[in-house]
Each structure stands twice: as structure tokens, then as C-alpha cells.
Image 1 (cartoon, rainbow, N blue to C red):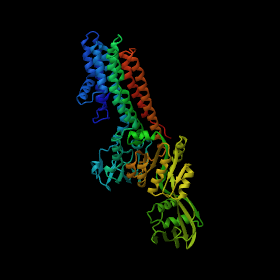
Image 2: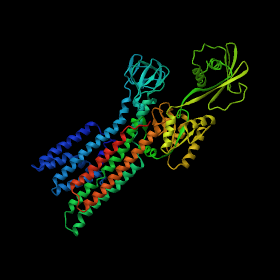
Image 3: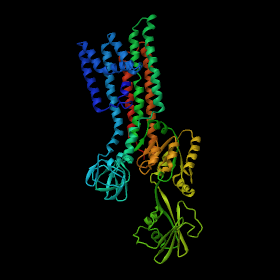
Image 4: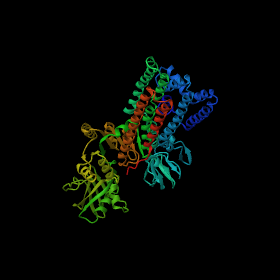
Length: 607
């Protein structure tokens, strides 16, 4: 569990942590164990067992010495065990290497398990797309092409369903086990699995810009950014190793000048105890497992440094539209002096593609005959003749009346020149938003909302969600300025959660930026540090919980490893520790720390 395996476990240039390599470690340890047992009859077999179990450690130590990297964990292991052989402690030397390899086996298994939770996302990579009755590479598909996805196939590219209906398994992206229904007009994401009906999908993004491509890119770079804790451990090991080598030399040669005793054995025991494997391996593994645990919950974290930031939040700042709300307009209120006001308004808006017009038609809910006598008045609204009546639908410039204060967009209606009422259209709050805000506040985290929407609309959302603060009518640059102000007043990390293109500057400026990945814009996802794949704001607290648990486990590992090392080093230096105890202080502590790190992989309940 030393440096040479850091370069074969995803922490360096070459990744070689596959199942084959793990099994080879176990086979090598078992062969060495057999030779160890027979060695009590044929002593030369101890040497064979030692070379089989520890050959890679010896080779790496020599290679690193040639490169000028002398004082590393491999050097400590090699020097201590070679010295034990020289003084005739054959069983101890061999057993150190055997237990070391067994520890390596469990560490590799641990790394595989933590990587598997992330690498399972690689299974979402589509192998092909069905275009015009033939299978082609997803990279060949262009925007606007119509592809067919059969039951059991992965959806290869993002698009809109134009024909068919089905249930879709989104678990690989969102962590949600319950399949979702999808039909004509619905957007679907690449990487999901079509479970039942045949779907025809019009492609809206090329493969390189698709959801699956973006996710795979995030996964591949997830462990590339180190935390302050990891950097500290790396520097610590760099100073620690030469110091303990010097102390071992002092123990070996200075005390014999004044006292009798086997000081060479004590020095060699001291070297074995001193190996900092538990710290060097378990700390990066803890963060890596934390990223894996987050991915199981549909949360993609772009680097372990963001886990450290997420663990100490003071304030969570939300965007409104598409983050706390659904980003879709609904008719919220109808104030009418005319029984057919909604019908006439829907008829008047029948030719418009504006989301507000669509919301009015949806609220009416009935089929609308084709209307020919409709005129759009720029910047004011619609003028139409419906069933012999003149209908005006628009703002107060078009409909001469006093404005009303409402939490949303107001469409005023006049019929035959007489003011007849108004319709309020507003964004709908997500079902999970109230719980998300409450849970954050219960966890002692301040909640703030920044929005470009009207003050009335912002106030209504703030009241419904019980947000601590809300700021409205903000341009993108105003959001950044307000966030700077919040950061200046904060005692901890400030997290911003958003989804739109205009949120990208604020996501970048925040200590940790979280983007809603389902409906979020590419710019927001690119700028964010964390991506929530199903747009559920409750997962903000889930990310914080995972980060806090990860940091707690990392601190436990550091405290445990250093405490045991200090106690055992003191005992070893005064001759109260055998080589067997030294093995526990090295391999045993590292193994326990590795197993502790894996607790971050457990899927948490965020609801």
C-alpha cells in the first residue's frame, strides 16, 4: 500500500487496478504463504517466499533510488525486511511482505469497489444508434436526424420524442430507481434505457454535446483535483520519511555506545512501523469513495477539493426559475367579470408560440378551432375577433386599466372595449423545494434566493418556501455583486445553485457551484463544480451530507493512523515492540483505514 501502488491505482499516470491485477496479488500472497509454511523445514524457501511476496516492493525501491526518490515507503519496507533477513529473522521478514500483499489485495478490492460506483456510469455510453433502419455510430448522427430506439436499448443522444411512448430507466443518470413515463413532445437524455415501447426521437444535440458525453467527461476528471488535506498528506510524507530513516539510524548506532541490547532489531522494527501507507492510501481513497457515493445518488462532483468545500457550508444561494421552480408557466389566478374570459383568451392566444400563451391554452384544456382574425401588437399583446367579439389580451398599454400587483405575469383582458378581468401566469414551485429549504435550515444552513423576476413573484416564492432572504429584479452582473456581498459576510462556504446560462458567472464565483443537470443549460453545467442530474433541490443537502461524512472519515483515518504510529514507534524504539507488532502498525492500520474509507460509498437517504 505504498508509493509504487499509488501509480497503479488511479493516482498517477498509469491505471492498473483491474480485477486481474487484484487476483494476481492474492495468488502471489498465497504462494508465498505456502513457502513460508514449508520454510520451517527447508529454510531457503523463506527467501523464495520473501522474493515472491516482496519482489515488486524491492524492484520499485531500487527504481526510485535510481531516479533520486530515495526516501519513500518502498525504501522503508525494503530496508527493514532486508535487515531482518540479515540478522536471521526470516519468518518475520517473509510474513511482513505476505501480510503486506494481503493488505494490498484488500486495498485494491476497496479501490475497485469505490471506482465501480463511478465507472458504472461508463455503462451508459451508447454503442450505436438506429438511423434509417441501420446501426451507426452515435458520433455520426447530426442535429435534426430522427433515430429509433427499441425496447431494451440505450437512448444514444439527447432529443425530443416525436412518435411513441414508453417508460424510461434514468437510474444511471439520476440515481432514481423508479422508471419514468415518456411520450410525444418529451425531452429525453442520452444514457437512459428505453424499457417498453418503440420511440422515434428527433436529435437535439450532437454526441459531443450530449448528456452522456458530458457525464463521461466529468467522470474521467473526477479525481484530478486534490484537496488541501490530500496536498498536506503528500507534503507530510515527503518530510516524514527521511526523518524516520534518520531516527532509525540513530537507534541502530547511538544507543549501543552506552547500553547493551539488540538495537539493530529495534531500528528495523522502527522502520517497519514508520511506513506511512495508511495515510498515503486511505486519504485519497476516502475522497475518491466520497465521489463514488455521490454518483450513486445522481450527484456528479468534479473533484475531491469540492467535497472539502461542500462539507462546511454557511449559506446556500438559489436561483429561482428552473431551480426552485419548474421553469414552466401555469395559470395561477383568473379574475373575471366575464363568464367566458378564459375561453376567449385561449382563442385569442391560439396562434402564439409564447410560453404564456401556451399556459393559457393549457388552462382552457379544450380543442380550439382555427382562428383567422388575430393581430399581434408588438410590445403590447393580441387583438382578435372571436365569435363576433373584439378581444384584447395583453398589458395595460393595450388594455386601458390600472395595473394590479400579482406574483407573476398578468394578462389583462378587454371584451368589446370594456375591461373584463385578468389572468395571472406564474412559474410553479417544484414539489421537492419546500422540503429542500426546510432541511437545509434544520441543518443550520442559511438559505437565500437571487432572481431576475419581479419583486412580487420573488416575495411569493420566499413566503411559500420560508427562505431567509430573497433579492429580485437582478441582472446577471447584479447576481454576482450580491453573491460577493454574501461571501464577504459568510463565516463558511457559500454554495450557489442554478440552471440557466445567466447563472454561469455566479456558479463560477461561488465557493462551490451546483448546476441542475436535467434541465440546466450547457453553460451552467460547464461552469459548475457539482451537477445534480435530476434537478431535485433536496440533493443539495445530500451532497453536503456526503461531503461531511467523507471529511469525518478522512479525519478519523488521519487521527487513527498518526496516533497508532506514534504509540508503536515509541514502544519500538525502547524495545517493547516485536516485528509482528510492527506489521500491525503498518499493514493492519492501513487496512482498517481503507475499510473505514469505504463507508462513504453507502447510498444515503436525502428525502
